Image 1 (cartoon, one colour):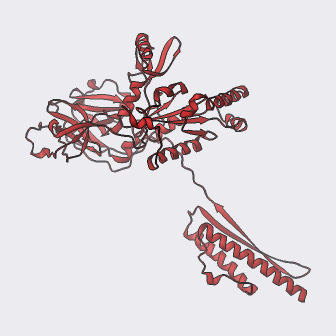
Image 2 (cartoon, helix red, strand yellow):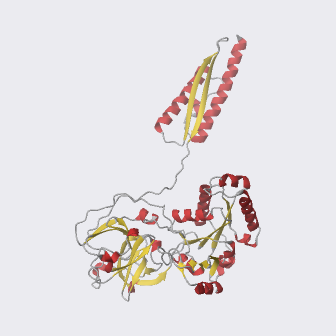
Image 3 (spheres, one colour):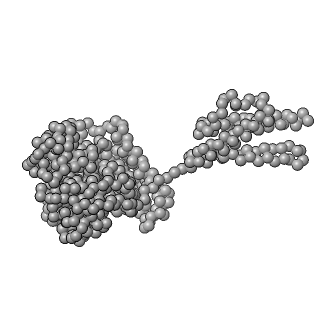
Length: 510
């Protein structure tokens, strides 16, 4: 009997130690066990009290599970009691499981099929705000990396759509540009009666049809229904002015009858879409819904927008097949309001659906050669007897829009970019070791050969040891595109929040 009692006490002590450690760990990890320290048990507690503790723990977990079904971490206790048929000793086993739930979010293309329509019957165009949330399509991306979806992420998050019904064709009374599958109004003519269409508006649909499917706008006849919303800031002109005086257009008798006015406070910045000797047609940059006319004389100096990242160019380098172009596209899709890419030049003839300045800038071979000789091209090449290349001027134009110019180029372009004018952040995307590369390669639709993979790794090693390496700021090994993209985003976030160290020569530009 004494031996059995001693054995039971030893088991009780061991059980108490396990229980105490379990409760303490649960408190540390998730804070679910809010038991008072006075309820923790010492070695003199009876087996009955210890059993009660298990009951409290199980009850506590059940309550937690009922009260927090969406918790990321859950604890489940399962209890079993067995009895030894020979000795009659009962054995109680409690198994505690921690279930960790992870959540992953993926961007998927969603068709813009929400109901944004508003019934309007007034011939002069009755406006009504659509309070429903917009959906964003990201499945259509231009060849050069810029967004070509009908709606911009910037528009969708900050503005509302409106529907206008007209009994005439307004496109003879306005000037417009086609930009990224939108029709952006740049100027409304003085004699126009389309007073509800303003510079800075983007037409998304005409009679329920996407503007991408309508070519000859001036030939439209009959009643016309326009779906309109403010164009993204970065898709308008990179021309900004700061107001030096307050302006209230309701007291200005000079305003043409059919025009809405843009009331301003001193210090407001406007984006100018068109200008004559007296008036500017523009909109406030901090509220894209406010657009209209304002007099030229209340505007002071022309101003430019600076990127919040402190760098003007983001360079992605890497050997073929390492994923830098995919990362570039992901970044342009994720934050088109902060990043843009430079449109390349080519000497070939435009294809039927290509537009000047969208896919390429089309130039003659002689003009391309002149730019190369003048040092204006950061990189260039020849394919099928035609020249292709990236010009410094297009990079400057991108920067003037207030965005970071995103380039995926070769290392030979770095000497043109690594200076005070462009202040680049240079990121090298490296392939993983050969074993990881083989696993990743299996997922490719057209896998590389073993020789190609080894050649890419060797080429990357040479690049790391080259004279260009001193210009690399960050090296990211791409084992997984999603993880690498997240690390790139974290790096960019640090640029906004932390002190940056740049070459001293960049701060003494003359």
